[in-house]
Length: 381
Ligand SMILES: *Cc1c(COP(=O)(O)O)cnc(C)c1O
Image (tube, rainbow, N blue to C red; front, side):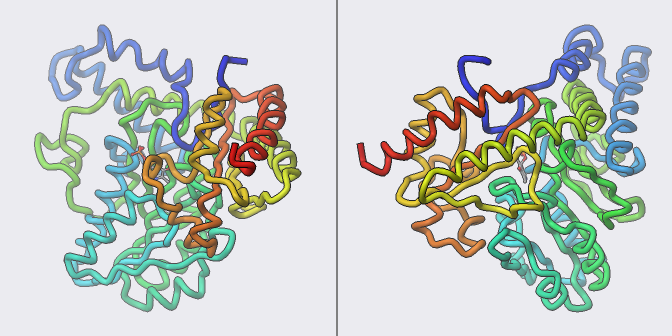
């Protein structure tokens, strides 16, 4: 056991040893620009090609359908703006869910200001959208439906294949933010009817600042960045070669060990959930069945989530309350509010997210410390 317990894998993950090893040559001797015509450049280009093949294979996609970006936020921003421009920008209706990451929601707000009909669907108590509500909102002429594969705050996994089918019935293209899901649960873009998909390296053992966008062949989306024409003209900028190679290695490793990792993570998660729910005044948030393997999230009555996270930190435990992006801001989580919890209830939220490095001994330590911390916070001490 390390001297601290890391239970915040939904915020970011450690770069896996394999990913780091794969990256090293491209930070040292193989530094040539992959666009260069000389031999070292061509070698780097081949490494990029292989990474693209690896990433595509992980999702059942073709290499030509993968565009590397600077991470999940960039992919989400690009795809929403791009999808609105598909079909000549004729169709003005864009649909998303109220529990998306801010990378989606804030982009939707800018689209609304530009005159698009940007609709945000509510969710049920478990954080899932209703397919009937989606069909009603989309009508027959929506441009885009964007619903995340799995939620970062409460771990709920959405019925993606059904959402994809409903999106297509309405004439829309379907995008999913799969940043939390990629490398953790199976994704097949064909079987799930996904037209576009965002993913990010640092959520599955790759480095930070690198991610990608899957765009189904034949969808003529406009460029995300203009410049030297890299990524088949759609995302210019000299490629983050080491990052891309590291991400591909991490994704391949995560997919190869997916079943084993998920079994271990969900076993630890279920132990954690059972133990935490023994603390009085505690509720599980998110879907009890359809949830990410390592994801546990709770509400504690009469506890301030921020204070809880600080006290856990003093006890050597890394956890978060709501999403890391809104940490520091004391606003209640938009996800929990959308799920029907009051602002008061939502304040007492805690997210514990596990990964392949976590151990039974760490769960024991968590379950030993947490009840006392909760008692202390409730007594106002
Ligand atoms: C982390 C996350 C993002 C942002 O990804 P970055 O690579 O950190 O920009 C987007 N969506 C979801 C669901 C996330 O969990």
